[in-house]
Image 1 (cartoon, each protein chain N blue to C red):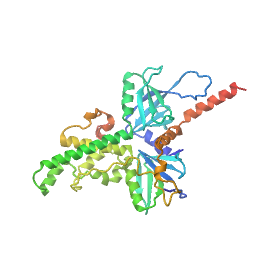
Image 2: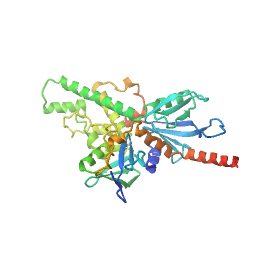
Image 3: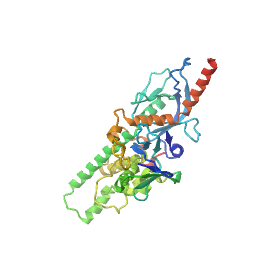
Image 4: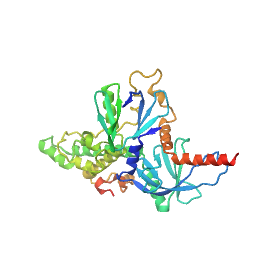
Length: 271
Length: 124
């Protein structure tokens, strides 16, 4: 499966702040057909969490990640491994591989589990929606407190209190805010954008959040093949997990190397 | 939803969190994906938008939609699709609520101290 690898590697290694980083030992997942199970082994890797993406590198200074785990549809739990301070990332999709990771100590393990369990996009979206509601309510109760009708002076008063009655700059400044294209390096962009006073639309409607998966499927041009409706594509076993496990496999160079080595050993061992 | 540059190919495109997956129209597994972080969505000519990435701005992934309306929908959806966008929204709302009410809304979630929720100037 293709991926915009250069952009992914860039995102992984650029100096936008990581949400968490550190060394972890990752259990090597061997093929089930491996006749002689030599016991589990672990590889020390440098892990970097950015958003909902967990990258891992061979070395801290490596220029490209060797692996990527998309933290959607997964749970993070402590696990009963022979190793102390082990935890696992397991996916709802039963077919997807789990990742068993070992931290250096109790504190490190707890920090990682905490960071990873809140890393999903869905979680973030949930919190944002909740805050959106809270802000709306706060605005409403503030407006309800005002007995007097709208005057030009009160709108400037609102500016002082609300600092941004419009909440629209988020929407109307696409070049600076969208997708981190040019903002993360300038830092604090949203906060400063908020205080601009030209967007005095008096609206308190916050920008809508991305829809939950629904509107994107099935937007084929022209007439799709007969029977190919969006409903058909939404199979009960969430297709998204297929997509993400493909992504996990995409980087699976380590697995591929290990498999090749194992196969070569098998050939040698079995004339 | 076809994909250029060289040849227009008909593809099914699906936005899932901050990834844009694309499929051949009759297949269940994607043939490719684009991570939508540090990218720019540009409305090109009629019915067409493009995605480009910060480290390679000249390279554009172009998409042609059936209608202009669809095109606008996609542009809007994609511009809000990044985790970074969500993060900034969260920080924005948090800041606003704090200013208005004097309370930090994240405290009830027990996540007020986490690095990724801090105002950019406070991070690191």
